[in-house]
Length: 170
Image (cartoon, rainbow, N blue to C red):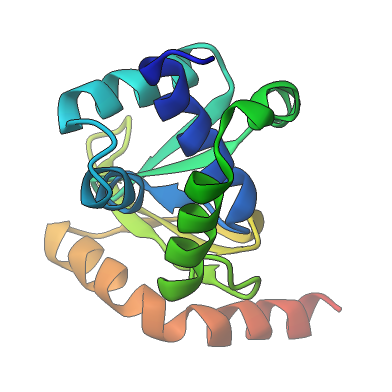
């Protein structure tokens, strides 16, 4: 029988395996806390250990942490998945379905600005589908206001921009 702390880790791995996209820290926390499996601090410790052991990969975009399962995480889960009850697995699948996390066509459109090595502003814009980067664009911005505006507009314009780039290159 697995220890409770191990079960928390297995739940996170199972959630990530059954979502076709990266999950945010908020999504994972919402599920675990809503079902009262553990408290927030134990969950964050479990997630942190999964990242440190490279079973889960963490990406931070615009102050949100996104997690995805690594190959080592998939292999580990395949060995220990039987330690999760069928009830827990069912609750995970229902949560993911209810929240649209299992949808294979979810598209992420993160954009964030930063100060580059020359002290100016730059914007990183991405278009990610099914954990695959379709475009990863770094653009110099003339000032902070422009950088913020570019980040705001990216979600509305990214697919058109991607289409135009592909049209020009193909």
